[in-house]
Length: 370
Image (cartoon, rainbow, N blue to C red; front, side, top):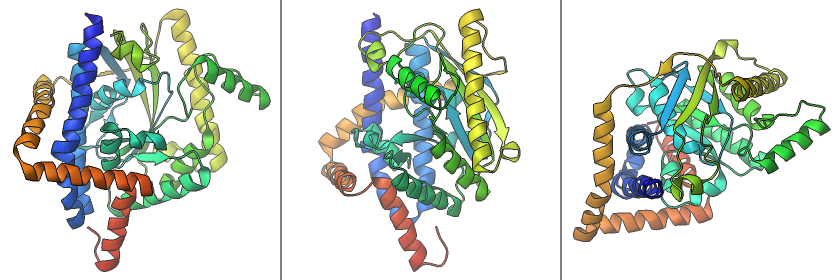
C-alpha cells in the first residue's frame, strides 16, 4: 500500500501544478499589462490556496503529522526565513509549515517565496509556476546574483509588497559528502565540526538581510529548525517510489524582530553562525535525549478550507483537460503562453525579469506606478 501511496501523492501533487499553470496562471498574464500590483495579488491568492493542497495530501493521504512549534508568521509583515536543509525533499514539508504558521487576516493571500538554484526554473510545471509567482532564482555567481537581489528587493519595495522569503544558508542538503565538505571548511577556518548541520554560507544571507534592513523593508527574521524524528526522506525516491513518508516532522520557528537584528555585515555574519551553532546543539540534544525545542504548537483547525482545497485541486486537472479538448481558444492561450515562457527561459533569466521590465516601462511612461 505504501508503494501506491507514494505514487498517488506524486500524481495528485504534480497534476495540480500542471493544471494550475494551464488553467489559472496562463489566463492571468494579460493582467500584467495593466497592473503589476493586481497581477501579484491574484497570483499570490492562487499560490497561497495551492499551498493548502500538499498540506492536506500529506496529513490525510500520507498520514504525516507536520508539527509546527514556536512563533507564528505575521501575514502583514515582510519576513526573511532561514532554515537548515536536511534533505532534498524538505520543500514538501515547507508548504504545510507555511500554511499552519502564517496567521493574520491576510494569510490567504500572503506569499512565501524561496531562494532557489537557477536550474529549477526550467522544470516543467513547478519551475514555471514559481517563476510566475516571482520566486528568486540564483546562479551561484555572486556578481550576477547581487544584481538580481537588488532588482528583486527594489521592485517589491516600490509596489509596497508584503511577503516572506525563505533561504537555505547551507546552500545544499545534508548528506555524507556535503558533511565532509563542511568539515573540511571548518578545519581550514579553525571552526567547530558539525554532526547534524552544515556550516552556512554567509555572503548571500548577509547581503540580502542588510539590503532589506537598509531599505526599512524587513519586519522580522524567522529561524526555522527542521527535524525528522523517524523516517528521513533523503531523496524523492524514498517517498514517491517506496512510499516511505515520515510519520512526523517537527519544525520550530523563532522570531527575531528587525529591531534586534545587527546592522553591520560582520555582525550579521556572526548572528547567522550563532544560529547554526544553536541548531547543532538542539539537534544533538534531540538525538541523545529525544527532546526537541518547546513552544506553542501552531495548527490551523479550519478543516473546511483544507477539504475544499482537496476537492478543487484534485478535480482541476480533469476540468483543464476538458477545456483543452473542447475549446480552441483555451488551447491557443496555453500553447502561446508556454512557447513564450520557453523563449523567455532560453533568452533571459526567467519570467520575473519580464515582470520587472514591464514595471519599469510603465513607470517610465506613467508618473504613478501601478
